[in-house]
Image (cartoon, rainbow, N blue to C red):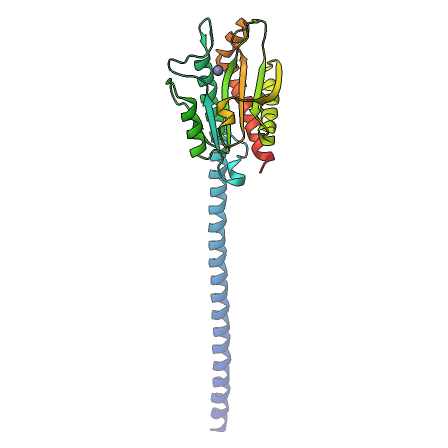
Length: 253
Ligand SMILES: [Zn+2]
């Protein structure tokens, strides 16, 4: 009897020990299961991040590669003013008219600036005549950050050539913008550097933002008129203006 009791006691102690061991194993298994689950979730999140980064990289590649201004400080509004339009042809030479040259360059410029994340406000959108007052009002109402007006130069001396930039009087930021645009356009196009100086044109004087009027070449010069009508030359001019604008925005951030 005494032996049986001892055996029973021992076996119940053994049972408790075994039960505790089993519970420990279950707790350990539960812990491992949770850890595995967390690893799985973590892996899933990591995979999503990687997929997101790939999509981001592809979008960036498609939209032109380099980092945009917009990614730094929101979107800037750039007013672009293609000179003349409609029955106001501007100056012309042979088959080249100023209103067409300015529109061609400004349309290219618009695409380039939008590619950099800027918002572009075209003060003339098609071949119509728009008064100086309407252009000024449109730019002011939109509270554009910068304005660039595009024209051609003209001289009685048909040998005159090159690019000249005019900036709003007594505006340091306009002078900086003119310098950057002039430098970049000359570099991109190889045109003669006509420098930058103060100008008193309505479109740059009466608007409220830093403003530059650029004469992209002398239409009175036969060779330059031909260049100004050329698609790839227009691209170079537009690229120079865009670079000048972007540099100016980066500087004034
Ligand atoms: Zn003009």
